[in-house]
Length: 280
Image 1 (cartoon, rainbow, N blue to C red):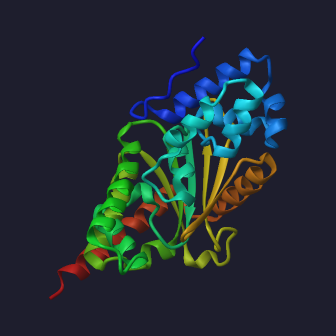
Image 2 (cartoon, helix red, strand yellow; image 1 turned 30 degrees about the vertical axis):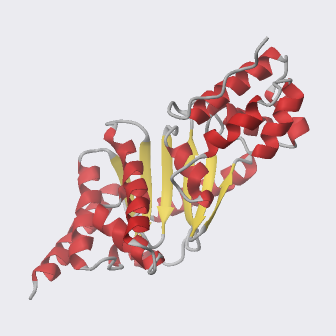
C-alpha cells in the first residue's frame, strides 16, 4: 500500500501536517503523553504540534516516523511546514498568532508589531539593520504588515496590549511618523478592536521592564508565552513558566492607567507630535 502523499505547501502545510500527526497517533492507539515520551517532550507539546501552533522539528519528525510507522512521511514534510517569511527566532510565535484566540502583550520601547504603521515599521527596521538593502528591508516590512491582517477580523483574536509610556515618548521616525502611529493605535481602540493600557512613568518600576512579553491562548491547544528581544526570542509552553508570565502581565496591567485614561494619553501625545511636525 502506498504511503501518504507529500503535503501541498500552498494549503496551510503546518495545519495539515498537524492533522496527519493526530490521525497517525490515534491510529497507533497512543495518547499525546504516550507519544511525547519517546520524543522527550510533554503531551501538551504534542498537542501543539497537532494543532499547528508549534512546528515539527526535523529531529522530532524522524522519531515520529519511527514510533508511528509512517516510513519517512513526517521527515519529508517537516521542512515544508517549517518554511516562514519571519526570522527563525520569531517564526513560531508569528505563526502561533494566526491561530490564537487571545493575544496579550507588553512592550517597553516599541509599538507592538501587530499595531505598527508602515512608516513606523520601516523606521524600526532601518534602525535595526542600517546596512540592509532596500529589497531586504521591503521584504521584512511586507511580512510585518501581513501580520497586522489578523486585525481585519472584527472580533478575533482578542488583543490586549500594555505599553510603557516610553513607547509613546520615543520618536521613532520623527514626530510625523509618531503622530500617525499613535493615531492608528487610538483608532483601533476607538473602534473597539483592541484594548490598550499605558504604564505611566509615574508608576515607577514594574514587572516587565527588561523584555517584551506575549501571551497566547488557543481553542484547541495549551497557552504559550513568548519572550522577545532583538535577534532572539523564546517560546515557552511549560505550564509553570506560562503561569509565571501570566502573573507578570496581570501585575503590570493592574498598575497601568485605565483603558479610558490610556486612550486620552495616546491621543494627547499624538496631537503633540502632529503639532510639532507642522512646525517649520
